[in-house]
View 1: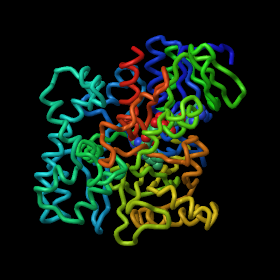
View 2 (view 1 turned 90 degrees about the horizontal axis):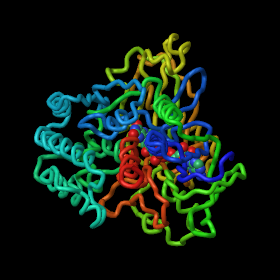
View 3 (view 1 turned 30 degrees about the horizontal axis):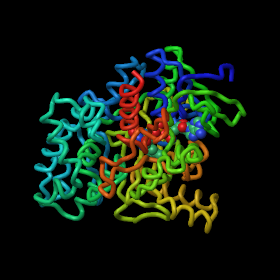
Length: 496
Ligand SMILES: Cc1cc2nc3c(=O)[nH]c(=O)nc-3n(C[C@H](O)[C@H](O)[C@H](O)COP(=O)(O)OP(=O)(O)OC[C@H]3O[C@@H](n4cnc5c(N)ncnc54)[C@H](O)[C@@H]3O)c2cc1C
């Protein structure tokens, strides 16, 4: 490494590390961002195959409405990215029907009422929407909401205090008991809500705090497609970091961190055998990875957080080149497998399908002109179940089985309008571990869960001086929108 002292080290160039680094570069901080992989984006990255660019994990962006985190970040760094609002944000296939998640509340209510009779859909969604706006206004306007300690409470301020107080009860009860106990509902409808919430918040309505349920279930009214896919989103942030004069390096994996003998900071080693002295560290890795890097410095570092009990998921993904006649009006689809059940290893009852836009030439001009689009399909897998299956059946056999299962879901859903379908890869927890280094291939972040109060969700403090943690296992949490908010919160609290 040419320079061996830098004030701040950012570990990882996923969405959180990229956003944090862009803010650091814009404000002229002395920092370097080291990324293990050859490409930016982490779980929101891409790969090229058969002439096209495929999203590896995340396919949707959100957080533009109500001056949300994505809008704030784009405005702050003047990001050059083309986003298209997708309405309906998702088409849900359930009980033999297709339900379109229109952004317009009344249209969305009407769609659900067609299928779910004797459910107070109207009252429920009026309440969800009213609360959603307040939740976004409050969380996006204060860097200290919800307060995680007395200090945060002091710093919260009194502006919009009525809104702040009105949102607090939503942090204290689960979604189901808060909203559904006084409304007419059915088990089928609860299952429907659970599947919707699993894709945005990785949790169910009886375990997710009401605030998370409200914001998670509203995700699909504010869904955005980045032209070229998530890779373009990540690349556009790298471009900004470089324009601002920031230092970001790929193929540099941090392998050890030790305290400098005079306690003035840390000495960091990479897999290339280089060393770097730094004063501050911002880890954007899942907290288990951070804990492994730091525990010899303080054995109890992050132990309380790492011992959290809510389920942590792995993902099964399939990547396909597809030719279809229509996309039913949306790029995003959730297929509930009510008629044919779960397949081996699957831990939810649905698959999420993401198409690229029909004329998105950034995906691969020749292939798009020939009528091809990309299709990513994903579902949840329990990590311990995955280990058992892997030991019993071996990787190659399992992947062939999952390809077959995914193709069945896709062909069943699109039927005869699917003209061509070609697999370009299957991802499982081992794949994610290999490309993102995430401990045991856990992805999707740490769900907010009533079994661990929202006020005790892992914070950006690690317990070691000048070592901070952001990303999707740290408050405010999951998804690109959550990690953007986390990156901005840390930056404005401690680095601006
Ligand atoms: C299948 C799937 C679908 C998803 N869909 C969506 C979606 O549609 N919308 C959405 O908003 N979210 C979605 N998510 C979640 C979203 O992708 C993540 O929450 C988010 O991208 C996490 O970003 P991060 O920066 O916290 O972590 P990561 O993306 O994991 O980034 C961490 C980075 O650190 C690097 N790294 C690891 N170890 C080291 C090391 N020792 N040294 C240097 N670098 C290191 C990794 O290579 C990686 O690039 C999805 C996730 C998956 C898996």
